[in-house]
Amino acid sequence: MSESGKQAFAAFAHSSLLHARSCLYPAAMTQPAAAAPDRPAALIGWRLLSLFYDFWPVLALWMLIGAVMVAAFTVAGHDTHENIRPLTAWWFLEWALCWLAAGGYATLSWRRGGQTLGMRPWRLRVGAAEGGVPGWKALWLRYAVGTLSLALGGLGFWWAWFDRDRLTWHDRASGTRTSRLPKRPR
Image (cartoon, rainbow, N blue to C red; front, side, top):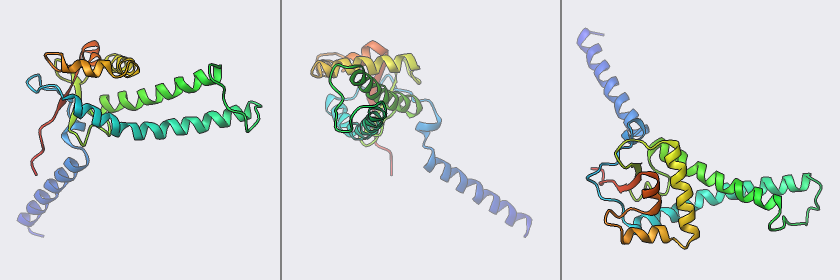
């Protein structure tokens, strides 16, 4: 092969590799998720749609935890037809595991790429209020306050309608913000 042919092949291989890498690992996964301060916070409707989408993978995690808990409950000597009674240690353990699993799903997704599965179709991204990737403490605080907000009938979400920056309780408490990304050019 001639020298110019080798150079052409090397250039082609390099550009193909870069293209493949950009398809497998978009910039969101290789660069810090910077929530641009000039981008407005996401509207409540987009947030609720992403929450609905995120319900399904979380439900699968809860079902897995439920199956493991039933197996452990049976192995512990309980009858196979007996249910885990409310307000017992088993019941609290199951709820704690479900809460931690959902929190792990959310915080790991936010930390790794700024988005959960439900946030991707709606182009939402969580980032630190000053830009960059939020820390673990901020993300777990965000999750805990978001859980409290949902337990109170979504009051912390509805708060975004009255907040001048359209931030929710969990955005304010954790120093994070959820913004809507622009459409990617095709």
